[in-house]
Image (cartoon, rainbow, N blue to C red):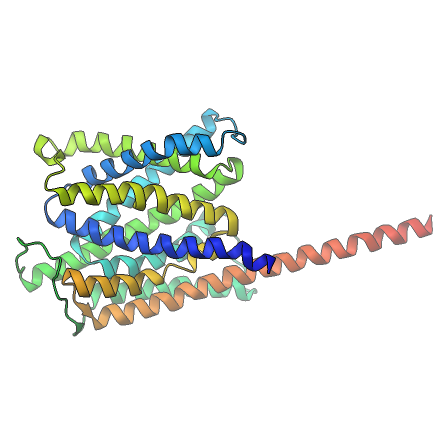
Length: 353
């Protein structure tokens, strides 16, 4: 029961975080389709999140707050840069494609994380172990699924109701729609690579600086600075900063409070409490939520290619997770065996003396 209790809060937290993320994806697509600049959107949401997290993070960690060194601050800046690039690529991909494609491709993150970990020699690839085989094959399968969901649409299975579609939306030529879909898939794939690098850097920082909310605050703080500088370069129109109509303001508030402060904070806490395997298990939930909401409210069309590609991605996704869980289990068994052997050796040596 004690073990179950330790998992209950992270379980509920991850369900809420995934629903919050899908909500952010859907609302951000709506507000950007109505003309809001994605860099300005990133700036507003992360600035608001940083303002919320500044007092709360220092209050919660007021008794256990590790010192902030230049090396730690540099790590926070790198974390913010990776997160900013992930958000920029992600919102561009969402704008060109759909919420369903976005949530499907997000399941590539564990596979890309594994590839980066191998490239930077943070993880060893041993072909004799079933765990390494499962992770390698799962990564390949996930990438194949990504190609399917991006390059092949197929016939429409479900057509959207367009309950929340923008009033000024117009029908694009089929060729333009296909080009946008592929371009959106490429942006989203780049988002996954940046997110994978972000996870590796975040895990490294949390080992040295285990104050989760302070880490999230500096992440949002540096993303706000970096996106603000980008906005000054690429957007010269003062009117683009307007939060009118009110729908923009509401989406920015949701993004800052729920999408950034709450979601990132909960995922970071769950990552520290349970590890990356537990956190990653919940990613496929977003696909089901985005399909239902996208078709019912946004006028998205659910294609056969999306179904096939998402299914292949999820199979590869869980193969990577099984390999990681198997690796952790094997490591725990080896550690247990070595601990059991040590007292016996000590006992024998004392008897001989």
